[in-house]
Amino acid sequence: MEGLNWYIHVMTVLTRREALKGLGAGVAAAAWQGSVDAATPFPKGAIIRTVLKDLSPEALTGGATLFHEHLSLAPDFMPKWMSLYRASRGGTAPAPVPPPATPQPYFMQDADLMAEEISAAAKDGVACIVDGGHPDMGRDLDFLKQLSTRSGMPIVAGCGYYTQPFYPPEIATWSEDEIARELIRQVQTQPVGVFGEIGTWDVMTADERKVFRAVSKAHLETNLAIFTHTNFGKGALEQLDVFEGMGVAPGRVAIGHVGGLNDPKVEVQKAICKRGAFIGFDRQGGAGDAAQVRMVLTLLEAGYANNLLFASDFSTASQLKRNGGPGYAKTVTVFVPKLREAGVDEKILTGILVDNPRRLLAFVAKKPRR
Ligand SMILES: [Zn+2]
Image (cartoon, rainbow, N blue to C red; front, side, top):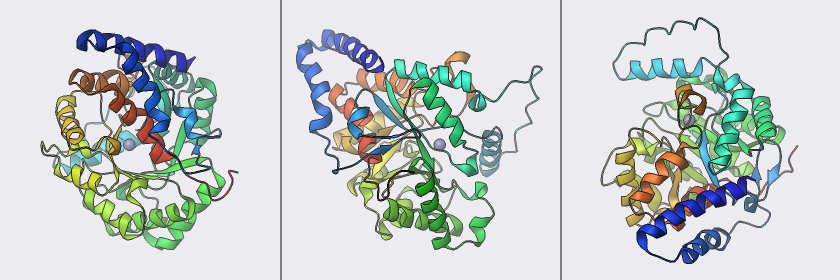
């Protein structure tokens, strides 16, 4: 059903676009349908590991895979994040939000609401959602499984440690190898499918470097891909330096939040692409889209369509459909139409939304799933 909806969505878009451009719709439709597998070789035996089962990468050709979202966070995660963020910008901590008159469950703990929102995203053309949380962010694997079961949406769960202010105490005392061993243990015993989001809060700290090196070792041991969090792009090249220095192939890494580096020449983003890594424009679908569109166009002109990843880093209730927002599919329904209007070809958009995230996520498991 989702596949059919995606097809209808695509055809609606094509019809509008062909009317504008006067091209034959059949030619463009063939480009959509033919671009996916022909252009996307996967290693033999590669899988995408979701919370419920391992999928063949070909199972996710029916829509967009959103490589960095949040479906499960602790209720105190975002308040802590905002407070730290404001303090780092020289501001004061925000005034505490008074509790609602009628206590409501936090939306990321409300399975009924979330299943509804995710089902709506499927209708909007989303085929898979990657959750970028892990235990230090309050991510709940059982909740993700429940959401996937109820909505039918394949969900890939992240694994790792977030950033210095959120690390559990053991990170300070464990060695790099001890951290790597714990990550490998999690991969071997839990249905996690990617290392992410792995972050630097500001300038990379000694502990963060230790975690990045440990994640590299765990990647080499398990083959799971890696995606990162940067402070609006800060230190993006340094993150890739650490991974490459540890022997991680750049093509297995996505450096995140680089849309935050507002540079019309996109020099850092180009440098990362040139080295073969992915870059995340992963806070899309909102007020800042115009500058992001310009940067994406510059990167496309430079020939880096295969390195781009889009997502929204969904984390606030105001964005939910129930609250009048665009919902989890806003990358597809709000951001991508702006690229389309700017003249980006549908085949390129399919490559970015459908193929690139599958190329990042697909891996050959070294041990069978437990
Ligand atoms: Zn995130």
